[in-house]
Amino acid sequence: MRKKISIHFKNNRELYLIALNLGLTGFGGLAVINRIKEEYVIKREIISEQKFLHTLSLAQILPGSTIINLIAFFNYLSAGLMGALIGTAIYIFPTFLITALLIKKFLIASQSSGLKPSRNFLIVSRVIFLLSR
Image (cartoon, rainbow, N blue to C red; front, side, top):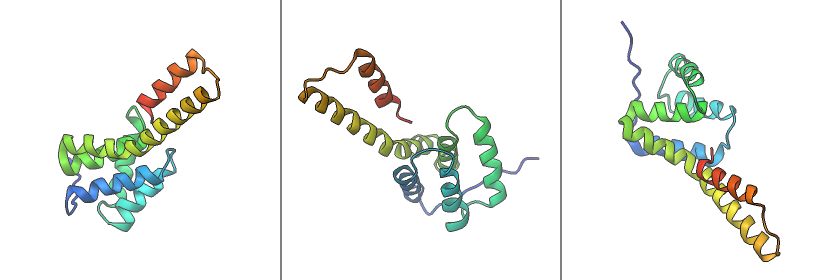
């Protein structure tokens, strides 16, 4: 018989604030896993370390970013599918916004200096803009 992992938050707002904090301060890479562990296991004692490690191992074997998988999973357990979608979007949004602003700034700077960006750059920059992270 399987044990169900349960996570209890005061409300979903706390969950989304964790995702936003991680999105603003953790710019990708596996180093964010330590921050996630600190937030969920040590600081808030929301989930046990053993359950966190089980969740981490599952997130690593699933396709996609391990961090996004973890964020989506914790949000899903607490707030269902819609919570997972909202929490993941909140985590991705800061990086998406920064990338979009940098691309826009570069395009404005290149137009004002008379440089024409290559067609390949424009295609790649738009793909990065759409898929950032």
